[in-house]
Image 1 (tube, rainbow, N blue to C red):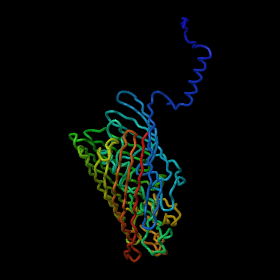
Image 2 (cartoon, one colour; image 1 turned 45 degrees about the horizontal axis):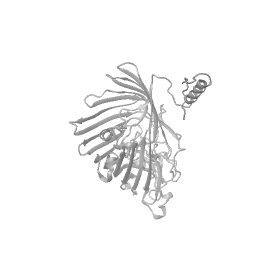
Image 3 (cartoon, rainbow, N blue to C red; image 1 turned 60 degrees about the horizontal axis):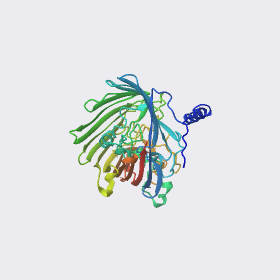
Length: 490
């Protein structure tokens, strides 16, 4: 074999070669998502939280595939820009799909994608200005100070840490609120002939167990249009205050700190006053009466880090001082709505079946009770407004509107076969106790969680009086549900 040396030549980078390269780069740029400028850092984030739910209302049982509204599937964009060493600014936009939202489903509706509000709901749309020393001001559609205060304790002590930390806690799996059966209709204990769709009440579980300002039982505040201030954290403490459209305002105090690397402690309390007559639609304007809800809530939790054992308490109250919220038959103001819950369990890496190689395992339970949550005054703009409730079987009732008028009355038709459909009755008291067992397994390497939850609602109390002030207790079935699913973050 003969090897012949040949001169080495440089690659030809001119002519058609560069033209083709530039054309290809242009094509790639056209198909790549880019920021509008290099000064604002942008993050796309979100989660998918989907579950299968098996439910039993006492006579009917079924299985639904649901968007888990304990902490809904969602997506968002965060942007931040540095002004100087002490100041920064930014924004947040977040939305959630409403299809098969667990809190909106009932015996007649297993998919609410076409309900009022559309298939996508905007959760956040706000800007902020931040100072390292003085704190942060937020304005737009943003969190009220009291928002998530009842989740604060559990979220703070159960946040993930380490290499795969996603700033989430166990309330992503289960919260104290009834978000798996809020809109399910009550099942009266009546004649066997009514143990079907025609025997269901027009009143939902949320209608008899909720705050006056929202459809939740504990986390009764939300995100509103307005302005809020969030202080820096000092020795574990932080303070929040804000004012929102149509004279709503609130404040809260939060605490979270680890003690000697042994105890993880968190607590928070918040207050909110709501004076928007058109509260649910936030339309403002005069509505023939003066609105005045006062709501308070809080949570406190402690975790022993070496063992993973934890315990927490949650409470919430709602008080109506609406000028038209006067009982039609007894002339009395609405009773104070109260809700409390106690939870306890363990969260740590457990060597069972090799689960410790996946991430933290959590087992915990809860007992809770919600009294007088029939929201007198939140469902009607005056004592003479017609009952805001759809016929049984229609599947169109909006649980956010409630079913009890400002004068405390309901139609007897709300409970077929139990009350006289031609008479009105005044609600004077409700009580909904329940207990929960939950399991959550972190899969750290995939930014994922798998979970199992069982909830048992005991037979609730529903007490009314008639025009003669005679007391009547409406017999109601309890409710059982089990859901299993997963969530993944991005």
